[in-house]
Length: 193
Image (cartoon, rainbow, N blue to C red):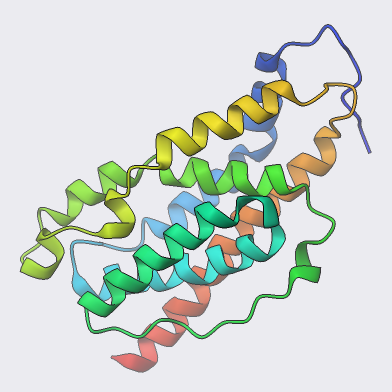
């Protein structure tokens, strides 16, 4: 494994490394979710259920971020209840992510929340008044604050102790949790139609 061991390296080097080495995973995840038109009720429910599944796993992998995950899960539960949809039943296995750097998991989660405002605007184009009223999950105002907190933690991480390869692996696993959760929900949504 490659360790980041140069004291002289700046945060920009770490950021650029992560962007470069997780870009393909980010793009695959974004393309997977682009299949959904969240201005349509069924697709929005699939989106919410997939995020619920993924975040349940991320929460098990990152005990330090529990407050963030619990807020997101509570908001999704609220939104699904408003849409008269069921919350997925899932039991996460913390051992699946026990080797993952928790900050890598939080990096992906908080990054995913940055686009929430744009997604919430898509809901405003919906013909469904329940969607036009907005989403608690997408309108929650913690995204930017949480992202800055993660970035601050990364900036303060001793550069000589940061194993970038492990961090990259953790971020890839977190992206994979979102894609896998969407695949499960896409499969099960065909059975609900």
